[in-house]
Image (cartoon, rainbow, N blue to C red; front, top):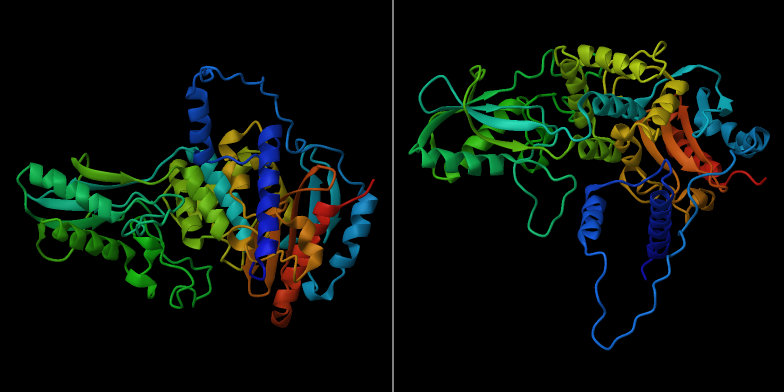
Length: 480
């Protein structure tokens, strides 16, 4: 076995046990995805009884005991919790401004608060708010449609962007299984060519319409170098591969044009001659649809956005929050609609100062209460539509932005958190945070947020490790 394989095996087993436990017990951490649903559907469709083969006598099957008990148990004692976390909270690597808030998820009772009620820079933990808002506005089954419609001129096509954040150029290579499955311009070109040939059309012009979104494509609250340096793409309702150039070499200055050029080239390879280069043009009202492709359901898109901390995906989802509220799809209107949506869900947004949906803006400010309240709302078993904002969070030592953290071999104190901590990371230079849910040693479900936003650059890795240790300490806390 290679070095590290044993640790990874332990992680995988821990995660499987936790997920099975939440499924059996119906707790807050229930794992929910399409693969499981399809499996259960097959089980439900199976006959109630199958006769044994002739001459074979089978014993009655015993009902298996649960793998683990459901998420339950008394919350840890406040004094014991503070005693356990106090040394970590005093760690100088976290810098002069740090805060932690821990609540009992089942009761909402506050168990620990450090840093008072200060405002903090949330960084990418803000994506939790964006995810909950868009799920509430559109519903988990919503899909984004990219379409081709007929233009005003004969044999003119308009490629219409529907704000699909994950629209791709091509399907994955053979043997590669992606999740969530992405709609592609490759499939759209194939369907379009088939429809055109059926109508006897072999020559067209291609235009494109990315007018679904409004406002600037670059957020004025972002650092000026973010877009030129390729940290984030210009936000568009029409793009492929989130604005990345073919091969991933840089980001497109005009994502909509790049998507249209990709589509036109794919159409040409399908035997449809495309005259000229694609130009921008708004689609006619009530134009006839020639072909269309749809994204995966929104809950899967949200899970992806949280898992890999997808900045572009979060900004597109923010604009959909605005559109769903009947407002223009811009950064500013998206933030206003998100605040109204979360306020309607019972989250106190009165002190929040927000400028985007990804957390890239350094001017964003949140009290930790807002992060914790939003997570608690998403974990509410009576709000199943919001569930993927919790189940989509990275799992410690196993997936997404926590995949390479909580290394029990290098840092034994993180071991209790493996497969048990499920949290969104938040990282900017000088800013480090975690916000999520965790089961303690007695099965109590806790929700927490921990942020340090004035960390010296030379202390970056140490501060991150301290936050991992803190999260793992919650998982191991506290003996009664």
